[in-house]
Image 1 (cartoon, one colour):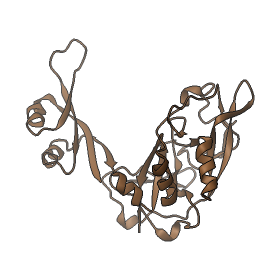
Image 2 (cartoon, helix red, strand yellow):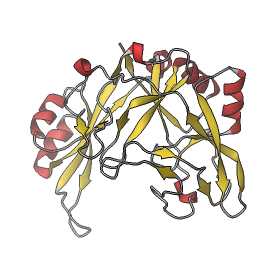
Image 3 (spheres, one colour):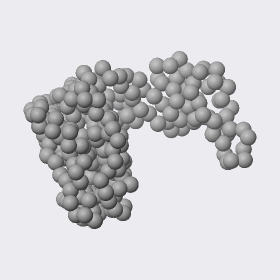
Image 4 (tube, one colour):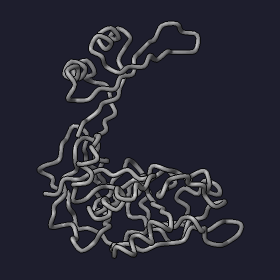
Amino acid sequence: MRIWHRGKLEAEHGEFLKEQGVRIKPLFRDANSDKPSHYEFIVAEDEVAWPEVKRRVVGTHTFIRTEFTKDEIAQAEWSIAWATSSIGDLRPGDYGWSTEFFADQCTNCGGGWRQIAPFCIKKEPKLGNNAFADFGSAFELFCTPIVLETFKTRNIGGFDTRPIILHKEDRPAKGLRQLIVTELADPAIAEELVEHERYTQTDCPVCGRTWHSHYTRGTLPLRKRSLNPKADLLLTNEWFGNGRTARHEILFSNRVVRLILEHNWEGIELTPVRVV
């Protein structure tokens, strides 16, 4: 596991970044500038340069991501699953939170929503080698028939499916269906073990729900007793997001993760959680 930071520093720090071997990209104020105003950097917390970079970026924001090895992913008891391939350009218009498809959404935090109708797309998607996809927002997860056939053969449980409707033809798409996770975990976050550099909680003054920031630094600690061991797919009880983008995270069991690795299915990102 490696924790990476991406941010920017003023040009005066350029020599330091170069001397330390930090990956950088010059940033210019405008197209006519011949000297960079800032340098974008990417550095891991286990690199020698990180302590000094951290000191220099105090007070400015960096983006954090955690990179996991294939072995760490294969060994994890549960992993958060996000599609990495988007078919968002196939939506017939930007229906966003249209009441045609969603109900019960909190107008303030976005939590509490439920999908009430199949999504529509313009035409059959071209997925290439991808077995999973979404609309680019990670609220929904689509997969190909081969995934569903394999799940059925291996007795994978905890989900149902929904068609994706071709808008003008008014028929289901053949190459993709929506994966509907039917099992909801109990509240699971181990509050005493979370990191607080980036992870936060916010109580909504309108609906009273708590929504959580996405866990980007390290592994999200979840209570084992809250995760149904008989299910292979779970939704977190907690809502994660930022502003009006709250959603349950989708969890895949180790059985599902190993199937994905075994078949080399593309279009999915797996982020291990820490079961405690």
